[in-house]
Length: 412
Image 1 (spheres, rainbow, N blue to C red):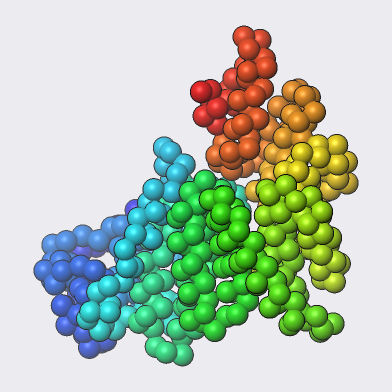
Image 2: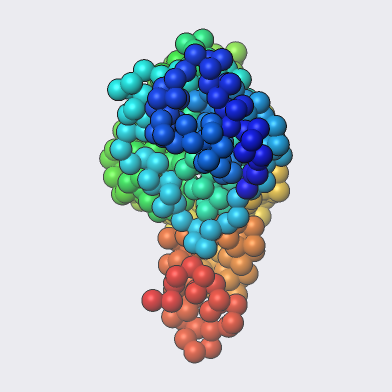
């Protein structure tokens, strides 16, 4: 929480507002408050101690946060919010409910300037860090503040800066879509992915659109709309392949293409189409070989190692436990995110469970949980495995297995 001397803060707000040529009513409309509230702030009656409100006020005034409140921490030093009691995305769901900036459409207002973009960029990087580490409660809290700010900025910053604002907005929605998929909230993931596509198109970012389609495919898979998932992935692949065929294709473009091949492999695996799934894994391997290194373009973590992680997952989906375990033996995922490392261990655990190796399955799942607890505890496949292990063990279930069953809601 930020504290400030009211005698200094109120006049500073008033002076900055006058410098921007704003009335109290215009400033209030820009930040979604009332003119009376702005008046009380300027007179020192209404304190502003919350960091998210300070940011909104700074955006409305078109200044950096430190100009408005010198004591505020820089974006690179902001502490992560305290985790909520429940690691869900309830607050994030509210963010995608309704129009994000209706007042801006109804009443033209001056908004944030380019000075706000570095801080917004740092915040987008932070939410992706939270996404990769599976810290969903913190992610939900962060996006609950960040997405509205980006939505307003994308509509109110000067035209030369709107491309960057829209690109940041697309990245934020992509993080939201990825988190919703991992939390089994596929309907919300569909909405977030669609908004990511719209923002990327507004930015003129064709590859960003492709990444949004990748997120959309995963939402469709979770909804078991495999026909829609296949159509979305295959259409994007066909378009990108015409551009990525040249030897000079940029690595960023190859990362998107390769990731879409992996997504399509998942679609085929879920449909039980073994040959088609393996064909897509092979195509992803070929793309990864062209890149020749591990990359994280568009937060996709595409590279040779991630392809093999996905190959393990595909084998598990197809019920080929032996193949999955053989592939996993040759994968060193230490350079990938905690979420990706945990994903590999979850699939190893699922493969052991398919071969009725209860001890090895539990060991792998516990190691995955240590890396990314929220990801593991909300994974439907893991929940099913743990439930089966509990049924098999009966009264002889170990304390470790019982604990994991409780944490993953697999006791029923």
